Image 1: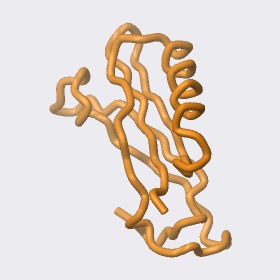
Image 2 (image 1 turned 180 degrees about the vertical axis):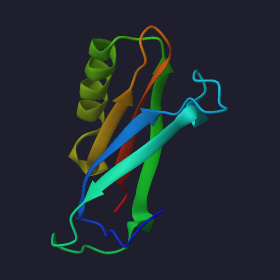
Image 3 (image 1 turned 45 degrees about the horizontal axis):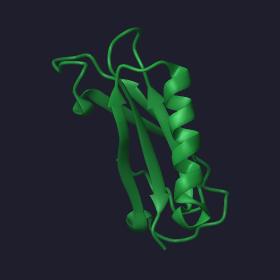
Image 4 (image 1 turned 90 degrees about the horizontal axis):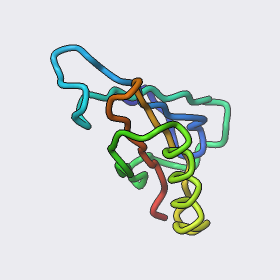
Length: 103
């Protein structure tokens, strides 16, 4: 639910495991939280932000971190990445997600 956040105001987005009724090895078993500051410059609507699931596997934090670094380098500055987040749960499946602008 967007409570009025605009481009340029997002500080961070985090993925969290949601156990509830879902099987925790499925991508849809994640919930997301975002931090934003409305006093930061409003750069327009969030509609041009894209979400991408990077990897979904049984990897360590180091594996997910290294993957995020490598992908950020490959995507380059033109991708306008504003958040990368990973969520892992012990030896169970973890995922890394990307949020970036397309304009």
